[in-house]
Length: 495
Ligand SMILES: Nc1nc2c(ncn2[C@@H]2O[C@H](COP(=O)(O)OP(=O)(O)OP(=O)(O)O)[C@@H](O)[C@H]2O)c(=O)[nH]1
Ligand SMILES: [Mg+2]
Image 1 (cartoon, rainbow, N blue to C red):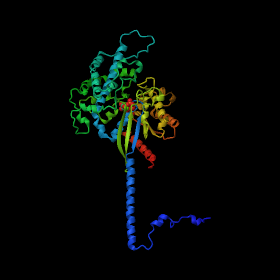
Image 2: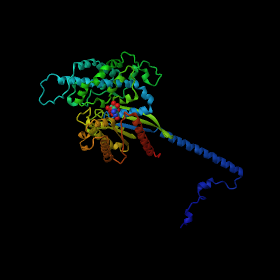
Image 3: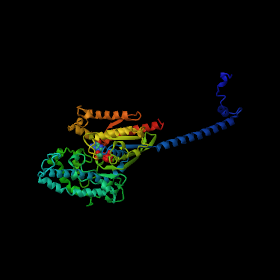
């Protein structure tokens, strides 16, 4: 039997120690030579370690952080993407001012056309009584329009051409997108479609170079400045801004008219809550040398068809930088390719692979609205259904999901105006109709689904947002970026 002592290998027995030991009877000169050689070897080894370290960091540096923006149409996905652009590529953001100018103009025309179409409806409803089917819904009781109103309406009819001209400029020649961007004829709208369908939507396929289409608008092709606003040819007589400016006074009169306000009230139509609302800034946005501000660009509405992607580099501390890719997909139901909840996510699913985080936007203000695409579906219910499908999706079980309960500004305004949350969200009952209680209720609702539907436990991240507000959104996006990066480092075993 081997003794216990024999089984222990001492430092003296270690083969490496033996090999490295100085030879017996080493002279002083030999010793010095040996030490120099060892020093040289150590230097080489350190250099190799350093290089390996550098390569490892370089690999990490090119690591891409991928974020996907999801939510129903008009939830604020593209606006969130614009915030990312504004913070990380402000030069690029500003080169697009000329393009956004046309979108703002189109939004103005759309709002005015909504009023004009409503006036036609009022004319029809207040005309001498026609025989009506006995089961027809009673027409709302509108105030009467005066001849002055009708003259105003006629003077604003050139806006139709402005709209066509803007659409032509937004879509490349011969593009099929022209159809997609057209406003639908409001005159044909049935009463039941009020509120949600207000003149159809303006959309441009993000895969087409609609922004570069605007280079045609610019006076000079040589860019000396990064801000394209300086290159808009304000003196071009064909610029749609010329007619808009000529119609400005009439548009302002129309929007401020008390009868028109009453008609909008009867129809329960709050234009100021709709996407792309600029009627409160008419004199500014129709002025001859109008250039959109950052705030205008965030408020401008252009529906997304297809997918937009924004890339930027972000330095995290003093260690390494990451490339970020943020994806914005169209949220309209027709783009989600289906009307049934089961395949609701079919169009988004191809982007689920490899995502580090999802920012899911649910507009709280939609509680009293229905979907444009389907007037039978309440917007808040649709958001909740979508949320459930996303958090329960097995492909996304390891993806961080951040909820933005968005449009809190409109939500607050609606509650303050007396719109009863409990009337639309029956389970809310008769709890107080104030922002704190209603937002707490919604947060709990989304958190509950997150907890019960997630395939595996994960943290619930939630922010109350108004993504048209640059300052607060900046802070929130910084929080989100920190969280995603931290998670990314944990996953990469760097923390
Ligand atoms: N007042 C207010 N408006 C908002 C807010 N978020 C977005 N909007 C506006 O709502 C409109 C729709 O926002 P988008 O970002 O285009 O919506 P989307 O989710 O990209 O919609 P799709 O492209 O159709 O999927 C725009 O005019 C925005 O300016 C918000 O928090 N408050
Ligand atoms: Mg969009």
